[in-house]
Image (cartoon, rainbow over all chains, first blue to last red; front, side, top):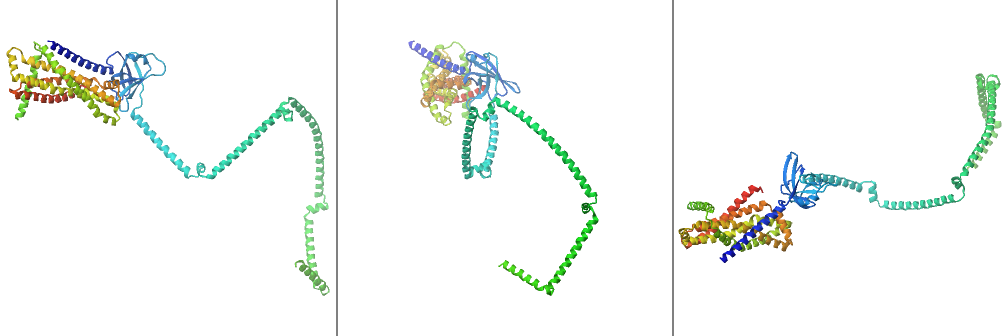
Length: 344
Length: 253
């Protein structure tokens, strides 16, 4: 009987331990699925559930705070996700929180991420809807990446072309890169620039000191710039100048005017003189205007020419005359001698 | 042809034996004390064997799969994978096979020897229902005790796996079991728990049938024990197959 009691105790122990282990297992699994403990239910609306299943985790600040309770298709473009969150996270989630879908790791299961919204809002309550942010899916990401790649390829091609041109073309960049003399030129240029800038500096310094001197000392410029009396003096001077010059000019103008009238008179006199010459019938007038006298003069000149030609013939005849031949021969000889002596 | 006929005859008689068990089960008087005694004998006496087997299975499974998982860079998934494997399949199956070997053979031999020595006939004469006293208590006991043994085996197995993970990968107790329970679903635990009842029933039914109907002579006892183990083991795999198919339908995995 005692032995039987002992065996019953052992059997009881076995059954209790086995049951406890089973219950513990079920509890831990259930706790992970938020089956036990008090929960709040909230919802959010997506256009694409992204492979989410009921029972997937809901994370807030990276911590599992609940599960997806249900996924309901509302219309052709909207899906409602019912989320079950633990009661203890309720005070931390506000009404402007945003739900988004993401994946646990690279190949893990889908999950819902709740992130706090901007600004302040009251704490979330049971049955509330929160906003959903649809992040680009993997396909979108790959598409974007593809177009980016194409752009990069185009860019690289352009870059290659540019570098080719720089290498082989006659441009400025090529000159800079390839021509070794350019560097010396640049160096000298820089040197000159430095020098000129130094000179400029010293010039400016001198200008500065000059300006200082002008400011301090009582020179002419200083007077002009700073002395207010000078101005009134100048004004007076200009007024007096004006007076004196205008008076003198007046008399000058009068004299000029007189001269002008005199000149006019003499001109008219000259005019009548010319008229007299033209129509007076004097010799000068004939000489200038009479056609017949011009003919007479032309004939006279012709007669003179003929007279001269005849004279020439007469002289030729004289030369060959025996009386005068010796004289002319001697004269020729002398002239020859003189020309020989002229060029030895 | 004769073999097929023999097999069908065996199948039919086993089925009738099972029907008889259910008919007797709900009919008073109940042999409650004998039932508890059988629970103790079949359950408590198997704990050590089941626990040590489970522990070794957990350790070995971890050590065997670990290099491959590390090679894939999936070392972090070790607890999840081991948890799923043990709870869903290895725990129930190993426990059931061990029990088929130990309990099935012991029931077959015990009832067989009682049959051979005509103790069963003597009980019938003395007014006690031998089927109720011997068969119903044993089948019910093993049916109810095996799931508990499976739970214990699962726990010890996971603990063994944790020890190896801790030794090789410095995984803490909390992390290991957090990951195990994170990945486990009710669709893992419930089918394997329900399955264990059928495993226990199959072991008890085959053991009792083989023993209860063993042939006369000392050779009959040995044959009863032997065939009880073989058929029970085979039946376990068939039940497992069916159970997986059914849980597949229910949970759409």
